[in-house]
Image (tube, rainbow, N blue to C red; front, side, top):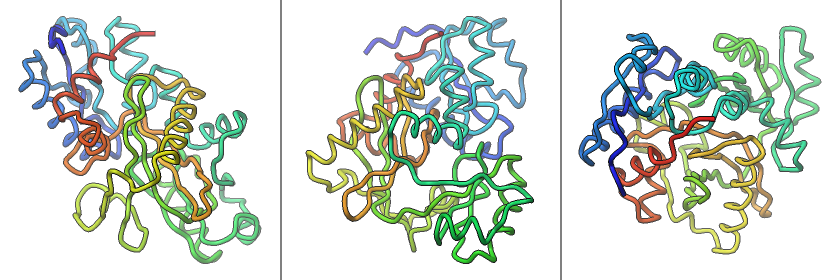
Length: 304
């Protein structure tokens, strides 16, 4: 693959709650691109004005920002105005995918399966929510990733405290029916869905700590699913990305129940690229080294 991409900015760090993870992702991407011969440079929007990208002649941007300000359409809009092609989804799809509530509404409108939910606020009837969704329930901020502010609630009496925690991260809080089954994630690269990864976390608790900083979560890739079932899930993931308008690369999370029913959980338009990250793991099984993966993502960079 050609590495003649011009001067490339790797955007990482930022000011979201996921800054720490973004710094790790961006450092890994920057190192890989430089090893591959790309004229790549670090750029932290929390420390420098984005307009410097235009002034300093950057030809394209690799977005390794996570969370708000990097994954929600904001930086994508700025790059559009500056005419600098960037990796991943555009403004609308990034904003939509960052919003777990509106993502679910689009998926439901398209007939795609996703767990039932309720939006919570200080006036919510906690007992009614528990009765409607059943227990346990997942409570999480609508606009955060990496399980920030998320709680698994096993008793209706815990719902108010779970809402209060999530509300520290976001004005919008969602309660979601807890669907049990195999936890899976499926990255896509261009028009291709990569091999599924099965996640087996301690006590089923795949939280921020287990995602990034411990080694006691098990990842199975290949997933161990029958080939035909894996193809069906990959087709579902591609459709889930298309209806949101996603492009370039991303990763959908889903649950597969014991009786074989899939439920889409959320879409990540700028997934992690750390040593614990799932996209590089899946890409390796598909025959792509980390450097090749980074180059392939960069090659998809565009405007519009």
